[in-house]
Structure formats: C-alpha cells, structure tokens
Length: 633
Image 1 (cartoon, rainbow, N blue to C red):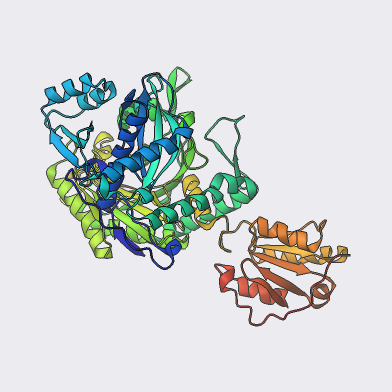
Image 2 (tube, one colour; image 1 turned 45 degrees about the vertical axis):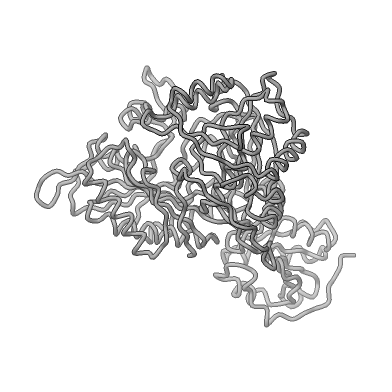
C-alpha cells in the first residue's frame, strides 16, 4: 500500500504566516497528476487567505451592508458564511461580480498582517463594526487563548487564527474560482439566522484548478445516487422516511458479497462474530454515557411496558455486556468480536445525502478486549487486516493520522502513554508514514484514523482504530490477572469500511459503476440471437450457477445490438452471444467490458477461465476463436 502522512487537523493548524510558492509548471498530462491536499500547509494558507479576500470582495460589492461570520478551508477549497443586513441571500448571479472584485484585491497586492489584541479591545472593535456573529465567536474562545486578527491592508480585518500568505498578490487569480452558494443556519441551529454560504476553491497553479474542475465534472457523472438509480441497486423511499436505504436485488447481491468477504477475512484473522439487538433499555445508554453526551444524535425513546427503550446508535455497549456475562481470565484474552451491526442515528433532513449520510446504517464494527501488553500486537493485526480488506476492494493509497491525548481525558497518564506508544509502535512496525495530531484524540483514548484515496483523487475517512479506557470503567469490566488480582482490559474499537452503505457509495463512485468481475451483481449475461437459442441459454445459465457464477439470460426481445447496449449500460462485465452455431458446438461467443469481442470458446473452458478471476482485464482469451456475427431475423 502507498501510505502518506496526514497533516494535523485544521483546529490545531499553526497560526504563523506562510508564503505561496511560485506557480508550478503543469505536468505533461495534468489529468493524471496528483493534486495537492490540505496536508500541505502552504495550500491551507492559500485557501484561507483566499476566503478572506472573498469576504472583503463581498463587503465591497454590498457596500459593507453584510456581516462576515466564519470561513474555514475545507477539503477542496473554502467557504464563508455571510449575513446581509436586509436579510436577503447572496444570489448565485452575483458570484461573477464578487470574483472580479477579488481579482482587483489580488492585483493590488495588499499585505496580510497579523495583530493580537486584548479581549476587551477586540470585543469593542467587533461591536463597533456591527459584527455580532463574530462577537459570539470571540466569546467562545478560551480565556487563555490569544485573540488574533488578520487585516488586508488598512481596509478590512477579521478575527482569525490563521494561517495566511504574506500578501494578496501571492494568490494566483487564475487558480481561484467561486463555485456555488447555499443556505446555512448560524451554528447549524435551525432556530437561528439563515446565512448564505459561498463556496470557492483555490490552488497554487491554474492547471490545478483546471484539473480540479475536470474531476468535479467527472464526480457528477459518477454520483452514486445517479448510478444507484441507473443500475437499479438501491433507493431511498420517501414514503418510508428519509435516510433509510432499500437495497434492490442487484445491490443486495453486491452487499452480500461485501459482507461475506468481510466475514471470511475476519474469521481467518481470529475474530468471532456477534449478533446483538437493535434496541435496548435506555438505562444501558446512560451507563455507557451516550445518553448524556450523544443524545442529539439519538432517536427519541419508545415506551415498552412502562420502561423506555432506545434504538441503538452504537454497538459497543452490547459487546461490553457480552464480555461482562462471564468471569474472564488473562488466559482468555484477547477477545476479538466483530459484528455487522445496524445502528440508527438522528440526522436532520437537510444533511441527508444518498448513502453517504443516512439515518440507518450497518457498521462493520469490531471490539478487542486485551491486556496492555497485548495491545501493540493487536493493533498491528488490525492494520494488516485493514490493508488486506481495503486492497481487495481496490484501495491501496492511504493517509494516516495518530491522534493523542486531549486536555480533557479519562484514564491515567500511564495508560495513555502505554496505549499511545502501542499505536505508534504498530504504525512503525508496519513501516507506514503517519502524521500526529497532538491533542486530537477522543477523551476516552488515542486513535489512528485512515483515509483512502479513490480513482478521482478524493480522500475519504473510513477506517479507524480507537483505544477506550472509558467503557471498561463504566461497565466495570475486569479480568483475573496473573497475580490473581482484578485488572481492567483495554478496549479497542475498530472499523474498516466505517459503514457498509457509505463504503458502497465511495466504491461505486470510484469505479464509476464498473465493478470488477468478482464483485459485479451480474458477472455474465447470455444474449440469445434466435428463439431456438433460449432453451440452450437456460441450460448454460444453470450450469454457470452451479459453478458459483452470477448469470442472467436476456429475454431476447430486442435485436442483438440493443441487447449488447443494454448489458453495457448496466455494466455487465461479460456478454455471451448465443446463436445456432454456439448451440451446435456447445460454445459461447464472448464479449468483455472494455475489450470488445474476444471470440468463441467452449462453455466449460470459459467457466474454468473465470474460476477465481478478479476482473475481465485478466481473462486469458488466447484460446478463443473468432466467428462471424449472427443477427436476429
């Protein structure tokens, strides 16, 4: 696997000013080049500075009758949220005017200067300018933190931690684009003001913007929601409610293969499978702490015989109960328990997005209960299993981040040091580069996050490995140690797909719907040219199914060219034309996706070639014989 270190998460990015590099020359084939990511602090500075330039441009276009709220950098660019004094939204048609004003600001090459102010003076300045939203941001900054502003020349300044480039002229206007506008509630609160969010993107060089735009257009074609409809894989039935996935037969076949592959690899890796309920008494979630700390992400409780029950948002408390069901000894550890557990989480309707964000989804959850001495070896095994499964699905380029103890945390210094050293040691034993997000761990333990890279160069957070010192304490989990005393196990949460639904969407978009042969819902479609060939096709299909192949027979109501086109549109990897000649010789004329007509070959010979074959690109057609095409009368 190709592995790269991740940049620290944005809240902990440095606040020093950075400088934009000279525009890089485009490679010979920019469409095949890697684009920089926010792992590059210089790109972060470019994007953050561009968002400030946009904010100043908006101020100018609307004669300062607009409040500037928050404007972070994001994965492929930046955004800024604005509130117009007249309550109107910023129109999409105004983006051209805003971009022209941005170009003027860049050309003027204003310096971008950092200032630090006392909290009281900062508050007075914001109130004097009528920036009430910024006052709320200021009030949320901890007393011990520095209050910094960045100003563009002498005209405009903003409460900001940085980083920024040295001057507006360090930005290339040809590498900047404003992309869209959207509505957004202040702080995500539906009871607060509706703001206008303006999205943009910025790059060091113009060719990178061009490549980014190409990828955006390609991503639109590959949208899993469009492919899901076109290929009849899944649907979201609004009659049943938003955010709930219905898997259609073809999609269910793919999901079944994903699940079986996952189960086989886990059982081979020493895991045992669990099945746990979908609901539980709400007291369980109070014991785990989810009711107190995660209630906004949980559905309302239901009354059952004067007790309250809760749809599960997590699987981990159930695994804790299984552990606690018996007395455990250090000789029993480690336990590796895995579950494809469906969970339910409340998401606002406006945040739902196909399979990427839903209200009911299946986590590929696993929990390991081990001793501190076993932890590093267990983490190595988790990383190896993660690599094996992700590679099987075509993802071999990863970005890794080790996140360490935050200011507020449970557990002793000793156990934090032991667990962090185990995570670090496991990554080093794998020889994988990784970034360190100091203070970015969860309050209950350090973690490793892994991002995969798809065919369009987009990164997706899927896999995670998290140590947990909290749940063993809350559930009073123990084991009898070697000295006969009672000790707490370390609990490790880990997921590889993250969720089946979201991983399926990422995979579908990455391959553009062209799933490899081993994963395709229909591997082979038989295309009868004549009515007399249909009975033979039915016999061949039965033989194929006995060999474990997923095969369909076209109804044969269309002419051959139409049958082929239909199969190609449905992304079937192999099509086999069957006419009188094939029936007479017990052969099939084979057409492969991306390779065209390969020729004719015996049925059993073809099945033998397909046995264990991952994709049609690897199909050995050297023994195929080209025959004249037949067409239906």
